[in-house]
Image (cartoon, rainbow, N blue to C red):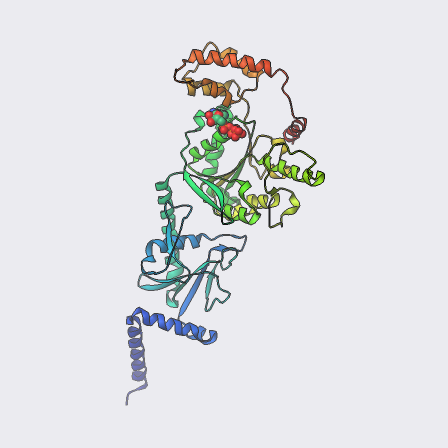
Length: 489
Ligand SMILES: Nc1ncnc2c1ncn2[C@@H]1O[C@H](COP(=O)(O)OP(=O)(O)OP(=O)(O)O)[C@@H](O)[C@H]1O
């Protein structure tokens, strides 16, 4: 008779044999077994189920609704590593990629092997109310876009998955994103509506503008460049003080003073993408939020002519009151209501919506974003929009003065000094010429190339004429009062 120790040893060997047999079973047997186990009642299945599951949703709910970067990392990873075995694929044009990103279609499953451990991946359309035997759930919320990945693995691999496999996927994604960005170069994104949904599309963006060619006060220019450099290198600082890694600029000044040129120079200086947000084609806050969430790190988000939106609000109010009796003052009609009390309206973009994305959502959707608002009429803006803290820097782009002129003369004519400079300086003080006007006068005309003497003499004539004409320029009294209010704030 065998001793009890021998019985246990025998049982142990039998179990080990079974375990070995199990690990050598073909994959479809594993699959069958998993399906059978998962169809058992939850309690029994929880007891016997040797598998664990991690759910990774596309969007998280807390602390604020935001895109889950782990979801994007997994998409990119599966697209590179695992889609070979899948029969149903889907293709998307990701923001960061040059071409289509081919990934798993919904409910397709692929198996991946990592250091001998099997991982089953599935993309699900609803981060199921019926989560089954979910043991760990990373960012489990699902909101507007309720897709999620489910990763199933044997429970003995939990440490491997959490400590090595998932971090490895994130690391790989970072490398891929950096490589993609380098390959595709800088891009300019614009938003438009496709089937009622706001989407970004992009083109290569290589504007020639640099800070070197920007005509403005050299001290101010240096200050802005230092500010941008501090921002770009401020990752640690922002996380240390618990601030979102973002910065807001308000560029204001008359048309032709270089606001767009400044944005291009900023993008060149920082090597960031530009997202040019056209609010007129956005129908509500939800769409605006989605567009913000789809912007990428290292980008400048631009909302131009923000004053036109304010005017529209005034127009709308007046319109209601006068029932078509009032004239609108020539600005575009925008589907936007900037009144603060309409934040819940689902059919409009509202000021509260815009501000909450600029402040709150931004903090949550990752780092390294600069947003720039531009306006020709700073006095018309709602103070809530431009208060300090929301707009970190107010930059006035002014009419051309002598220092700015010298930059233009050097860029366009290659001239650092000239006998006419003194007169030009005097005339600039007495007129309101924009850098765009001055630059226009320094450019070659027709086929004949003018030399510096001719250009500068023509410019002097032009300025004398402008001085006479602008002896008493018409002023918008409302605008002037508002500008005063702004500067005294
Ligand atoms: N400060 C400047 N420095 C150098 N060039 C300038 C400057 N301002 C204007 N220009 C020239 O004038 C052109 C128009 O300027 P820009 O579009 O940047 O002005 P803006 O202030 O954005 O005008 P708008 O308000 O009408 O959009 C530019 O392409 C550039 O050549």
